[in-house]
Length: 600
Ligand code: GLY
Image (tube, rainbow, N blue to C red):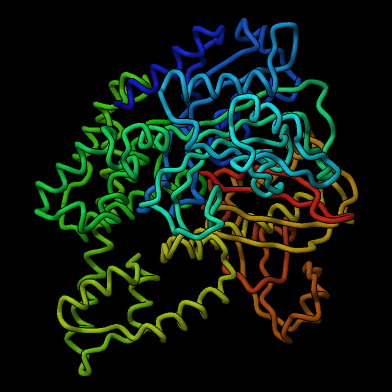
């Protein structure tokens, strides 16, 4: 079955059962607290929580869609059988109830009818998971009974904890509920053969989840408490690529029509075989597709937020393309447009624009790689023992974006080795210094990350000062964390910061950015710094001599912010771009937390 046939079958099935088909929303959600669209329900959040009426908007409370999704948590896993960065999710919804609404039994019946009657899957290969009860919410006996009525054997109904079977909310707050998932046994040959192998097996991917049915009954509120919604909803999600590969009896979606053309093309132009280089081939085709979809939704490479994801995806794609010896991986994109431009109209006619965004980033990265390569050549020349020191390898990683495996590959071609132990030591030292969670997760982006970090440090000082101006001088820093994507600032304040206050704070920071204020550094004794009114918290941690950063007009005696900080910082607020608060939430009793980003 082709991808287009499966999409059509699903949407036709639900259309014929009185569902309104809603087009996919963008990969960039309207909810600013969420970076990317990760599930089909996101565009329906306000309807699911009862704040809006789906009948008013869609003429129907039963909806279905094929949604573009993107999950960044899976980047490191790309290359295996079941993960993708960009993927599609099929879903159906029953929002709120009237005499036509359906809940658990309706959702389970639709799922069984579609998978078994329509697609011809053997239900004896199914496992289903149900919520076993936790946190004051009862075990889902009702779902167990419905599955039994549909002929699922009792020993194939697995009771799972909230970790696996309580879904949502997408951000910390919002609609959620216990869920029941259909998993499919793909056969012994893919398994670990352990007696307890089954859904969510830690050792193999023999059994994979294909359809998640969420019985949405709760709302997680700002205090982290679960309150009953005034309505019940059905929210479901099928991993499109997984289902497609099962229907084609292939072990992964890379062996379906979606990617086949691209993989053949790579084989032809590289002379390498997919079977022998699966991971690299898969990364290249997965990332080519995701880069096109991100750029298609208007993302441009940058060092923050969605732009950073795109940058990372493109750079990874370039690296792995080089490893398999193909130069111009973007030309593979033609296959993506062929497959998708009739499904997603935003791609239609945008090819040149999307290519030019991606190409510009590739060129930028290629230059960096080139300088890195020249340095590596020198290191190879100078190395007497046939070993590249860990520090040198780390420098390539940190400043030129060379991942260890790329350096290793080049070095081993010349019969050299890398001192890996000292590489890891350098990496650890750097990570301890930068305290940058995202950098660890995303791999080195070298100097860029440093510059971005500096800007976010300066933005944190502006935010701190703005909070004190808008909310009062009781606001004190309780914690701060910066990574390449965002800043996080915890501060003493007992109430939720209202949307109006947040707006004022955001505007004040942006006003100070627009004023192009100088960011001035002075070194002085701690006592002196405190005397001149520099803000300081966690006092005990400061050394005797500290750096004081002042943001303000150097000609005037007034300043907007003065803080003790080990830095680094931007030179001028004008470098910061636009400041945007993406989340305000409770951190602990009496402490609020703000997350914010800088947009170029
Ligand atoms: N909202 C259901 C899912 O994403 O699995």
